[in-house]
Length: 349
Image 1 (cartoon, rainbow, N blue to C red):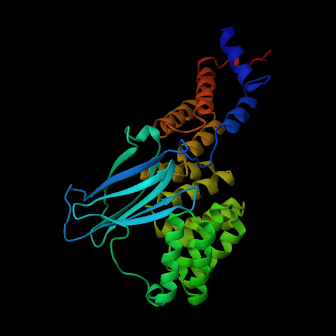
Image 2 (spheres, rainbow, N blue to C red):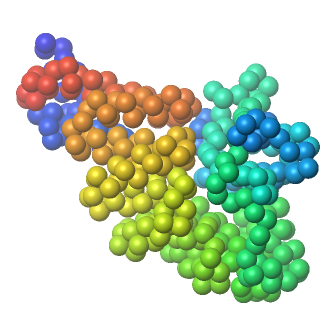
Image 3 (cartoon, rainbow, N blue to C red):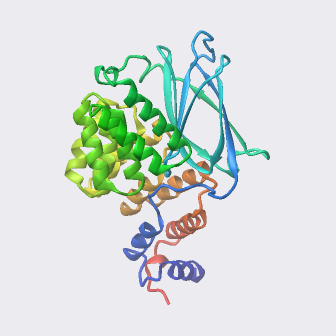
């Protein structure tokens, strides 16, 4: 079985497969988000909303919100009477889509925009089945109701600027909004997300904390704060915040993914696995890439069959992933580790 041993040695540049091969696999498995098939082509997202039994309620017009993961892009629309909607001119990448029909249901999930999902005209069709749990009411907090109209007007201008990916204009309008209404938690949170996407994590943390100070009942800045803390390796603070986020919204895959990532960083792999698997169950395409984080856990545990399963699932769900060749290399090396356990530990050439 010399061929088996040679191929592994060539891949890992190691005198023995363990532990150097484990380090190699960990180095190859990325955990960051990505722009799937990023390029000049734009796409159209066409969607249909329905209730769990397939019905629609023509008396209600659901609203749909779309936000890019890696960029500041944001857009929203009202579904038509037949509960269909569309977004045009979308760049390839991952997006969070949120649909709500007041008092009927809501749904938040990740959608991937790219060539593999589109038809020849660049159109991508999805169906959103609302869940009865989660946000289903039009009720808003007393803080939100107290926002003056001129501040709300600035906030809407900021959202329009985000749709045009005009960062400077969006920040200008948001800063004016919080100047007019310092209690405007949503505006503080938006400033935080803009800073976070620019990798200005310390500034993002300050904005999210301000949003929470102004409206302690608001969930978005809480879970966003957990991400900002984790990105700064403030692990104990991140653990506290992400535990609270999971407690407040146990169905949110983002909260579970961030808590799982925090546990990975703390070396608590059993807890990490539980929350990452929960995130995947809630949203298998979630932008946090739970399969990649799970694969890293299974590498550390030397559970190579599980590594392969997670990576293959990830590639099936994300066929436009730009580093798919690297992940295929990991899968092949891992398969050879399983097939040739004794040879793979020998000294390579």
